[in-house]
Length: 183
Image (tube, rainbow, N blue to C red; front, top):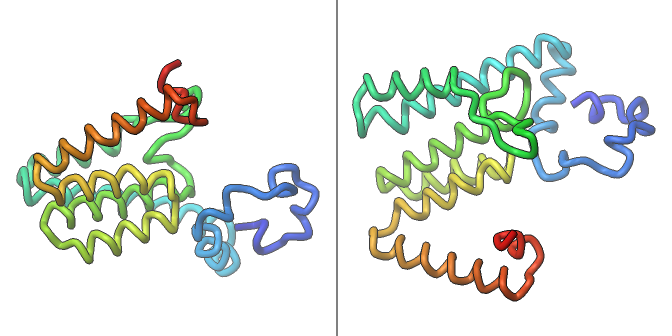
C-alpha cells in the first residue's frame, strides 16, 4: 500500500524493483486509500481486525446451518487459536495477526463453499471471484471444494480420479511442477 502511495520512495527497493505478487491481487489497491486516509498504523489495525472478524464470521456461516451453533463456535475458536500454517518452513498462516490478504480471501472462500453447499451457485461464484481477486492461491482450494460439493458424490469421485490420473500421467511424462509428485 505504501509503495502504491509513494512509488518514488520504493523504486530502488529490491522487493519492488522487479515486480511483486501485488500484481495478482486487488488487495493493495483497496488498502492504499485506507492508509492514505487513516495512516498506516490505524489502517493496518482496522484491516487486520476486519479480516480476522470476516474469517470468523465466514466460519460461523459455513458451520452453523449444518452442525448447529455449538459446532460453529468450536470451529470459530479453532480458527482463532489453531495456527494453520503452510509454505516452505511453515512461514505463512491463514489467520495472520497483521494486514494481509490471506484471512479475507479465506473468508470469501469459506463463504463460497457455504453457498455452494446450500445450492446457491451464483452467490458461491461471486464469493469465489472476490477471493480470487484478493489472493488467488488462497481462493483455489475453496473454488475446487465449492465445485465438488455442488456435484453428486459419484461425479465428484469420478472427477477426483480423473484429476489424479492426469496428474500422475503428467508427473511420469515430466511435466514441470506436476513432476514433483514423484519426488
